[in-house]
Length: 123
Image (tube, rainbow, N blue to C red; front, side):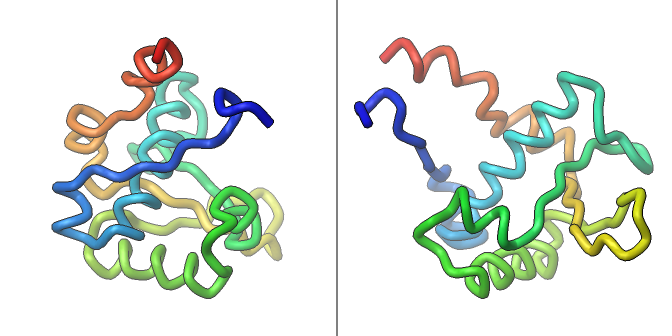
């Protein structure tokens, strides 16, 4: 695999100082997907945009964390009031969690990684 096709994970220093490095990395991921859903006008419930994934699906993207670490990071972000959890699954027994930014406007205006993708790809 060449370097261009490798995934990039990063964090904002100010978010890491406030919430922790792991939380900042996960938060960047969630902000990206909420922003993406906002741009596509999809996954809109209860006045905000959401993203969803199971812990096992997150572990495919974050191969350097265990599933228990991912669950802990998500719980930490919920406990700190940064994200909220929901369930908008169509099938009752589907336990996939949905996540939204507690202060969506603030995070999308100040930390939206979608706005920087073109700049990254040109480097």
